Amino acid sequence: MTKRFYALLALSLCVQPATSAHPPPDYIRYAEGRQNARLEIAIRTFTLPSGQTVDLVGVVHIADAAYYAELNRRFTGYDSVLFEMVGDPSGMTRPSEEDTQALQGGGTVSTIQRAASKYLNLSYQLSAIDYTAKNMVHADVSAREFAQMQAERGENVMTLFVRAMQAQMGSQMNRTAMNELDTFGLIRILMSPDSAAEFKKSLAKVFDQMESMTVAMEGEQGSAVLSGRNDVVMKKVKEVLAHKNQRRIAVFYGGAHMPGIETALIGELDARPTGEEWLAAWTMPKAAKPKKPKTPPADTTPAP
Image (cartoon, rainbow, N blue to C red; front, side, top):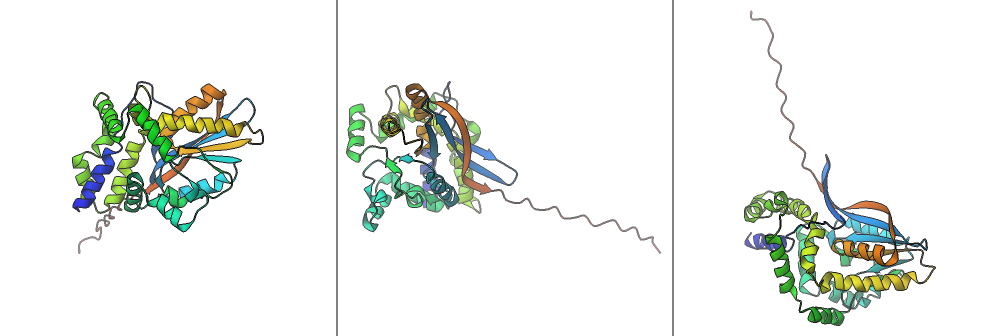
């Protein structure tokens, strides 16, 4: 139980949000209906003056298997799908068993994501998405390039964490969502009959504010994690669209990247938004309310 508590605490500290006076475009939202609650991710369509279209397909890196299956189905309809993956993607696009296992299992972040997916009964993106299709195009940096980008900015995991914490302390957060993941909230979740389901719902509410959190992490000069890699994907977008046979392409990146990529599409390519759709990445059924026992009818039999 101690390990489970620290796992929950560590995950909650990774997603502390902050707000901005000018909120970025929304690509992640928490929604509730009568039968379930959902973490939903947007797909937004942009049309260029040339008539070519770019779909920004946001994603979370652990999600329901059905969500990834739907993305795989949709990806077959694009001329190119530009995807994120820091490092050498050859282990995914031309997989051997050894390369695939190394890529999926390597790195601290990957290890945490895989552990979280098992705990929350979700699938892991690198295991669920088909990166071997011919239209899949790597649009990210190598590990060496990423390290160089961070060095040029004097940036590491700790500096990003400090930025997020400083912005968090100086802003007004969504207290309703955060109260569910404070220490007492975590204890309540831990002691519940289905702690994974309870934590999953609370975490989804925090993810709803993910775009605002990225503003805090960026700082004035931008970060290698977000704006630096967004510059790389935009360069690749321009390269692909230079081929006029590329009529419909997708950018498949984490939802936190999408507000910056959208801004660049509009500002640099004169794109205009022409469509929006939301897919349920996490679907959390609500527990059925117990039925109230029927009150037996009063005995109206006349006394003898």
